[in-house]
Image (cartoon, rainbow, N blue to C red; front, top):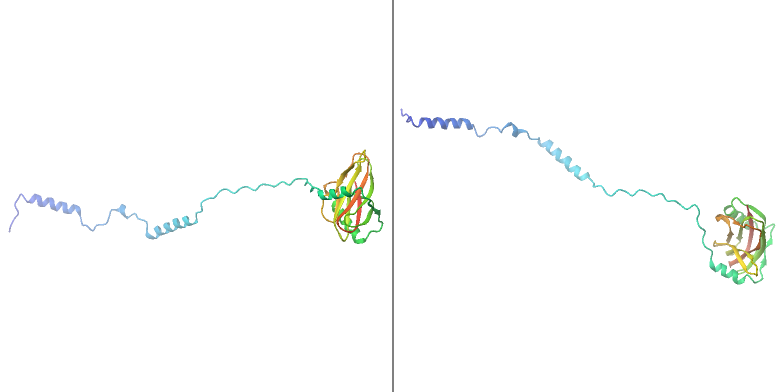
Length: 229
């Protein structure tokens, strides 16, 4: 039997020891490499993350808080129609029809006047009977009026069928004969009011003047009545 030389034996011993220390190449990885999440838990975590991305909406600008709108306590009335005043002043010196007391005015016209008074003369009392006249387009009627000191009145003129545009003026004559308009209607249509919803017309001292009702468009019967506080 052949035997290896004595000088080779130490080398063989070292090679065997090295092979025994390396161990088999198919051995399991160290325990720390086995700490991996299961595929199901990994997919679940990914799904949650993806859904969160889809549902996320970046915040927009903060909404502007609503502002309270404060309405004026008193709404200014519309301005008078300058055309009505020009027509009136151009014909005021001409003879005018007189407004006559009407104890039994047409029922429909009287009901219309009463309905207008409920909205325009609220809290006021009718002062005397209504005055009536039948006017054609461009004609006017006149009524002398007098009011005591500190009076507050509202005048309403109600046009009947055929009256399209009605105007109302309250005037007084100054020293020297000049005519002064102290009140006029500012509405459009067959109803004319001086005072009314904007407040009754007040006078500080005794007042003497004339009330003029003018049919600017159309023709027909009109009723005029005064209401006072």
